[in-house]
Image 1 (tube, helix red, strand yellow):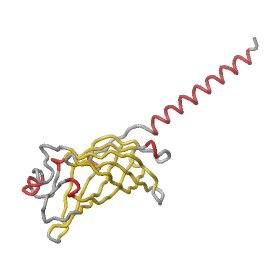
Image 2 (cartoon, one colour):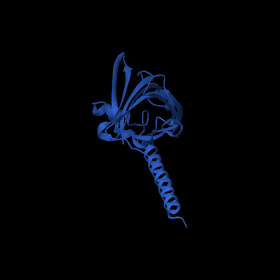
Image 3 (cartoon, rainbow, N blue to C red):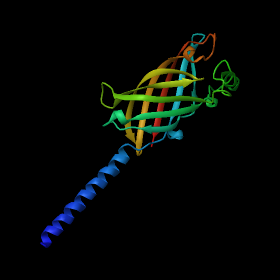
Image 4 (cartoon, rainbow, N blue to C red):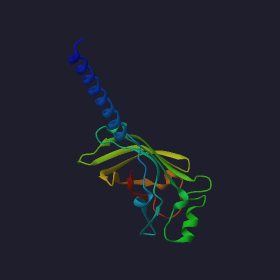
Length: 189
């Protein structure tokens, strides 16, 4: 046998193996799950109460994020937030919001969001996620525009959306505004 042919065949095999291996590693990195970093993330809400703007915050979400701007159909968000984490800087109000008329934290400890699709927005770095938001066992499809940028070995997401508290049976006939604005900043890695 010709030794040059054998060496060429082995070299071709090694080159193909390296290419397949590197492609596989790249795909795993590109589609790997990342997770919100609590210390560098925030969820805030605001609404009108007796004509004044008020609000508070919840703990950062926990869960899994898969994000690849080059292949958005494979991107997804599956996150939850603990309802008991509600904080309006007023202890008695916070306890009231944890009761059955509002978040009913004993029976519904989590707010959940599961995406159904992620698509590109009109500007570079902007996107829109469509998914199901579940609060107090009531689910509604929402859409949230957001931006994403690479940061500290992960992705930094910033988004905002409006929701009607009555869609989720929060607050009953309270005098607070029905519409809340939710602002989310999440670093995931």
